[in-house]
Length: 126
Length: 360
Ligand code: SF4
Ligand code: SF4
View 1 (cartoon, chains in turn orange, red):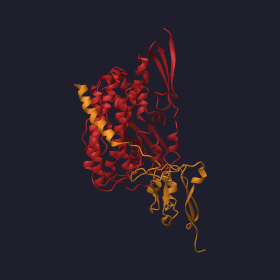
View 2: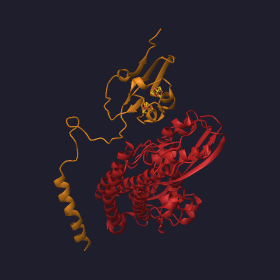
View 3: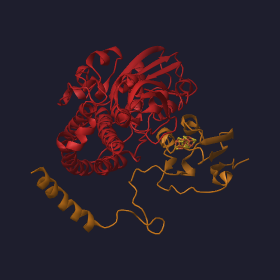
View 4: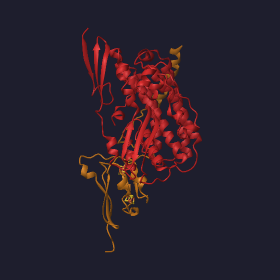
């Protein structure tokens, strides 16, 4: 009886699995489907950034660095090699300047090449 | 008869994480065993004293790779208590939803590991296939399969639209069916029973003596579950049963875990239907008033305890983490006594080891 039940369970499933085709994606030849909230690389809307440093202070992996001379002269530097993709910077920023998108391809042989200057703000009216 | 010593670990195909056993074997049975831990000690507790309360959320998330969310939940719960902060109900519901999804994911993963260890690969495939449904739900919710980064001090940072809620509910329908089937396998499959019944026995006295928690304790007849005994909101508004078994062997643990999975699916559905409107998080101050707190939650493996002491700054003075695995780990020498060498793998799988958790 159990045997018949197992067969009745198995066959529709085998059929469905076969009919569904491969579940893998030929990445990178075809695009992959990522959820909307996927946490990938950090990006910035540079015009909104005020250099307040909250994101730097809250980053758990020391992935952000702020070199600040005064209110209007600062550089915000991002180190993807340290980043934990946690999204805390996006959560901490009060101005909606920093955000994560779903770009996750970071492969390189050179760590230094990854570093990105997100904001390079200089005083305009000297 | 000659006694020989068989070392298992620190690196061994049986173990998913490093730990070491020395088994003294006479013929085919294990006479004695000793246990060595500490291979994945990462100093997380000490590190917590170097980082701010906000940074620590992501640090404690790394304590465990399977039940990461329950660790941040317990930690945030503690900090919120110190702050005297009231978390909005919607935030609590969403937090709990993730906790329950994580329980399903953890138990299905564990069933796969057990099946693999007894050489029953079909169940392993089924369990891990069904686990993908939960992982998909969690990824859609939080953006990550295992590290969700959902909790903030004061609530959560995700929200749910009506549409998304309906999608999850339909995914849960599918999961319900699959989990019921898996439970059927556990209850009726003869080869699974033959490999797991009367093995790794732990009596109720031993459970009490070693302060074992979670499914291992419940499988030995100890009726404890923090979600029911001291229900943090929203558990006090949800209905569920706590499965308990008297046998205390590996099969009983399997049964308890699968029954819990069924209950968790039920809980997820209740949470989604009862989900109140409102904000998901309250704003928290960065400096935490001086004081100390003990925060507890029912993780998939049992009760996890956080002790947090604050000196009034934005960095905790002490964070102490008691993970549930530690309590079941120390019962292993008792469980392994007299066990056949071929069953060692089953006993090891039965307690659902998470070494990284225990070592921190
Ligand atoms: S995502 Fe997390 S780790 Fe990465 S820069 Fe932002 S806060 Fe730091
Ligand atoms: S990104 Fe936001 S938080 Fe970071 S420095 Fe700029 S304004 Fe401040």
